[in-house]
Each structure stands twice: as structure tokens, then as C-alpha cells.
Length: 331
View 1: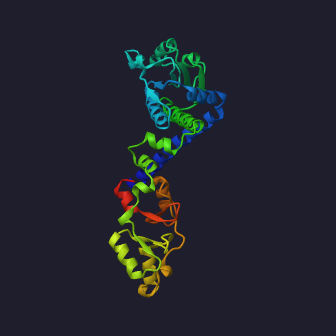
View 2: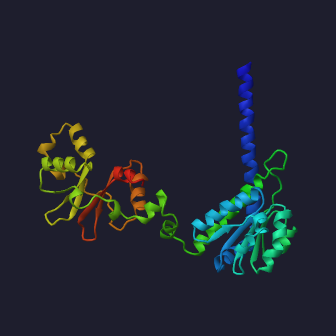
View 3: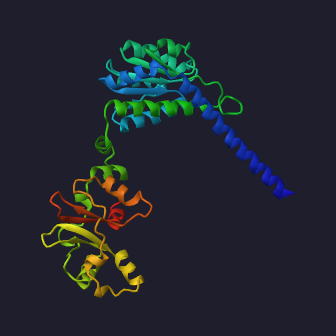
């Protein structure tokens, strides 16, 4: 009987979780249908802003405003968060005439936020309102209204901000992404804004920065024997070696796997030539290829591989990227 009650309880919890997801999904569909030219105007205002974008909101809306601030800043739009209460006690010095304010408030009637509005207008800053109430005080004070028609919160009491905060977060993401495309913000720009993270390092570093080069680069001539190949792979501890012709041009790759496959086939590798065991058409990259692209080539495939030859424009095998080296560098 106890197990039965536990199972029923667990099923009720799952049903409630699904109900919340469905409710918030419905809210997003409703808001999507309400997207109009005001949203396009807001993006153009954001793109043409010569100052900074200031986000503000009270309570849960303030938390969402802080997240949108971070997203905008990381994607090329200078943005800061201004707490409405702090603003009334000195924080207003942050606001300048060339700034643009994005204020978030579901009801548009928050006392703390609305107390701030006249002072924003007095400083000459433009105002975009993100609200579910287009007739609110916040909306009336705004230059542009982003209407988010929230009918029902996912909260069973229809009180706690749930659907409304999800919608505000999604709209913030949509504005940031539209701005990225409007400004042709690319991976290089993203890397400059994220120099400390793994993704930033992947984008800012190139194959030349992470490859084994010079004396650490395992290279064997095509006419050398398999014994010489094994010595080179073992000595350089790279798990592979690039194969070059008599003119030093890259012609293929031999990995540990290629040699094991020859052994598993019952062949004596020392009776074979390098050409018999090498892959003549491996994936390669240029020295200026971003590390992010190189990692994607190695990982985003049905059978990921651990080494990637680096070949310059003259066809020379100038390096080898080893997945263990990438892991060691946090890439």
C-alpha cells in the first residue's frame, strides 16, 4: 500500500511538472503571436544607441533584467543593470542622455519602478517598456512598448511570476540575438568578449597555437619502413604520424588504430609498406583554423578521432593536433 501511495504521488508530481511546462509554452506561443513592428523598432533603437543600454526591474523582473544585461554585454551590446531603489539613492548618476533604458514590469504599476520613470525622462534617456499591460503607467511613459500578453502564470495561485518571467527572459534573448545579426556579430567578436572561458579560448586560439610542431611533430616519409613509422609514433607519443612524399608534401596519416587493424587482420605490419596502412584522405586543417573549428571536426562525427593533421597552403605537414593536448589545456 505504501509503495502504491508513493507511486501515485510521483505521478502527480510529474503531471504537475508537465502542466507548468505546458502553461509556459502556451504563454510563449501567445506572445509570439503578439510580436509586431514595435519589436523591430526596439531592436533598431538598441542598435543605434550611442550610449549604454540600462536594464531595470523590480523583484523577479529585476533578476531577469540582470540576466538579459549579461546576455547583451556578452554579445556586443554594452549594458548595465540599474536597481530602481538604488537609483533613487544615488544610482541615477549612471544614466545619461544618450542611454537607452529597457524596463521590465508585468503589471507596469510597480511603485519602485514607476517612481524612477520621471527622472529617466528628465535626463533625456529613451525608454522601452516590456510589459503585459499596455495601458499601465510604465507603458504610457515609454517610447516603445513590447506587449507580452500574459493571461495566466504557471503558479497554481496565479500569483508567483513564472510564465511572465519566462516570457521576459525569452524576449531578452530574442532582442540580443536580433542585435547580433543586425550588427554582424561573429565568432571572433564573441571570443573577444569571452577571453577567459573555454569557448572563448577555443575561438581565439588557432590550430598553430595548439598543434605539435617542429621536433614534436611526428612526420615520416612515405618510402620509410613501418619500423621507422612505429619508432616515430612511439617517440613523439602522439598516437599518429603524418606521412609526406619525397618533396615533403603531406600525403596521408597513419594512426595507432590503422596499425592495430593491420594486426587484427592477421598481417605482419613489418612486411607492409606505409602506403598499405595509411589513410590517404584524412581530415586536415590549416594553421589559421580556429581551435573551435578543429575541435568540432574532431568531435562532431559518428566516430570521433583523436588526432588532426595541420597542413599549410603549400601542402606541408606543419603540425598535429592531439586531443589529449587540448584536454590538458582546458580546450
